[in-house]
Image (tube, rainbow, N blue to C red; front, side, top):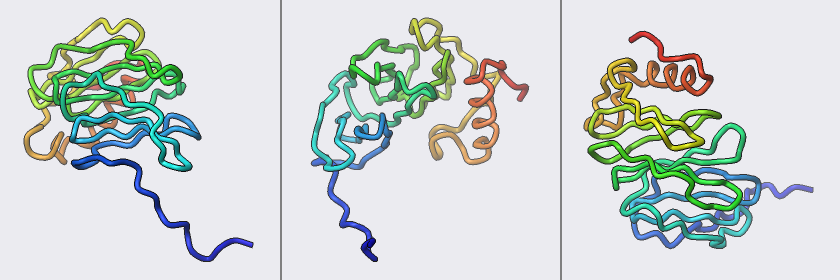
Length: 173
C-alpha cells in the first residue's frame, strides 16, 4: 500500500538567506550552497547536518558533481571556484583568476569551466587546478550582469560546456 499523499517536506537548513544551489553527492548526501556563505552537506533522508565546508569567503553561487562522482566544484562571490573530493569533502584546488564573483562552474572528467561577473570564462585542469585559460572570446561574451549569463547565449553556453567536458575543444562562436 502506498500513501496517496507525498510525505511532508522537512526543512534542510537554518540558512539565513536564499539557497543558491543543491547537488546530490550520492544517495545519502546532499550539498546545499547558500547566499549566506554556508556550504553544508546534509543527509538526504533526514536533512541532518553532516558537515559544513568553510572554504569560501562569502556567498556560494553554484555547485556541480563530476560525471564520475569523485569530485564536485563550487563557485563563489570570493572570486574563486573550488574543486572538492566528494568522498572526503576536502578542498583539492582553489581556482583563482577571475576579477569578480564567480557565478557558475561545471566539472567534467578532465576540466573545470567557470564563468564570472567579470564576463570571463575560464578553463582549468580538474586534477591539478592549473590553467586559468581565458576562453571568453572563443565561447561568447555573456552579459553576466543581466541574468547570470544572458538568455540569448544559454543554448550556445550549454553546447560549449558539453563539448569542453567531453574533451572535444571549443566550438566556433
